[in-house]
Length: 144
Image 1 (cartoon, rainbow, N blue to C red):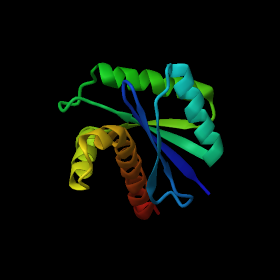
Image 2 (cartoon, helix red, strand yellow):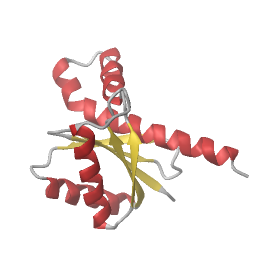
Image 3 (cartoon, rainbow, N blue to C red):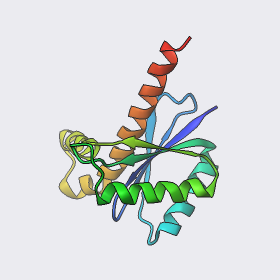
Image 4 (cartoon, rainbow, N blue to C red):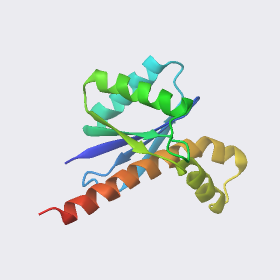
């Protein structure tokens, strides 16, 4: 049984998703609203322990031209803090357009603006993790 955790680091909220035990699909977990980075790291480490996570996938919000801005820098610093905790491998995942795609999906689901605001980080984490899982499975299918 192998589980992965997906993270969408926002400035106020952190979206979190976990894979199923076969590492095929990503499911949302409640959004975290920690007061400090330390509290966020502790909360995520608690989820890693709870679900037996072997790898954490942190969204890297690159600019459309591929450069890294302040949000990407924050995500990399946060990923480094998680990795220093040592409980699991941490992988950065290019998340360009995931928040926009998440917003679009929630609009299509006819959620009110207030509910979308609460769920967009959660949905972005699902999209980040699902993209990672899909690529992982494609690579396994093509390896000897």
